[in-house]
Length: 397
Image (cartoon, rainbow, N blue to C red; front, side, top):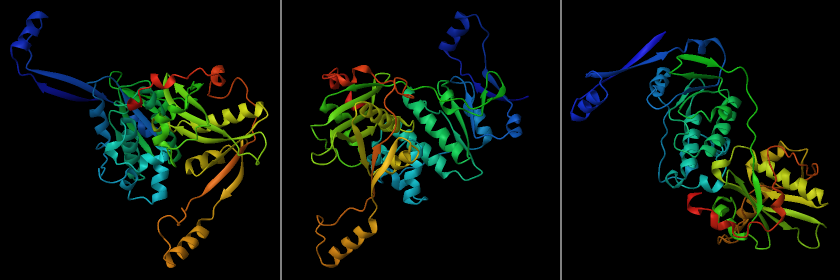
């Protein structure tokens, strides 16, 4: 086995002399740390994700550099976040950010400096992963060290899905062991053990438990800046908030369909999952949950959206959601707008926005007690959270 020695000269003074005398140890001129290196087994099997783990000062960064230079990012503070991914086509940049769990469209339009810690970390991961060429090994130091631990789990899950889907290689150095079941590494390495340990197989992702409560209209204040279309919300909406470990992570608003249209039918007018918790599939699970509950009460539930990420989610849920309407007349709108411009009528109010929207109806099963990853709180239909907004630190979310 090969070792790396980290030597550091000690500048002795009255403080070091106190340590020598108080603990009866011999004066030292330098400290020496020996870090075992044993990565040979990496070359004997196919892998995508490796994790070097251990406490501070155990040599994780030193070992990581054995594979090359650490992967870096570079953001222009004046540009919207998505504009920093200018080596990609716009659609590809949007897909990359979404794949890292950063699917909030308003977030894409903000500069990097105005993002939360969790958003900045996801953006940095997207940049580093997206910039890597086919043969590069992506090297990330201090993985998830600066983010909330629940956010770290969501981020790890989003990252591992993207890395495996695109058959890339990444090595992470981390002092947190709680990410292991979410990042699901193919191998791990501990400097203290001095050996590489190969994972036997990929495990099922841990269960996520959520509590859902009926909430006041004002709870929307936490979520509204993250909605991709508008911050407005109809005050007649029935509102729900979802908590994970007492943190608010998603918001749902439901309205009855306009009178004279479909009988006994309702529509989801707002669905927002906070950016730090995107990438776990929570949005689709929540849609399925509410659809199943409404169906049990003999009510129909619909949703209309222009969000590309939700389009993809619905494509994977054809057993639960049926496509009912699709507005894909972008070319027609362009022709109309061009005609208005040629006629000098483009005053900023007459031009129509080019967008694709799709409508869906829930067709899945009725609600059961064991709804996948979601634990539905029995109090959701009661007025149990009328003062709920007061317990949330909105600035800290």
